[in-house]
Image (cartoon, rainbow, N blue to C red):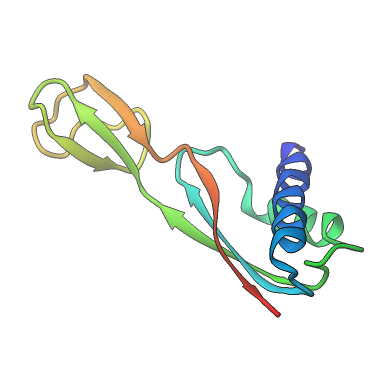
Length: 113
């Protein structure tokens, strides 16, 4: 379950920011998750609760924001939104697409005390 290690990384970032900014507690963590990231959301939610125990984010609400996948179509030279990495271009039907976004996962913001 790589979601556990993802949450450990999130916890490390949160703890670093808590030290830098004298944050007492984190109430909400908003994550942006790309549709091609391979993150299993239910597993991430479970891992988040487990990994955050004993940290400044213990009991924090995890909010996951979906980011669409985007690709460059080399047939029509347009950047398009796609639902699946293997989907054809919605503009021209071409199949020469290079994903340019949608595989990311990042902390968008924190609600803190």
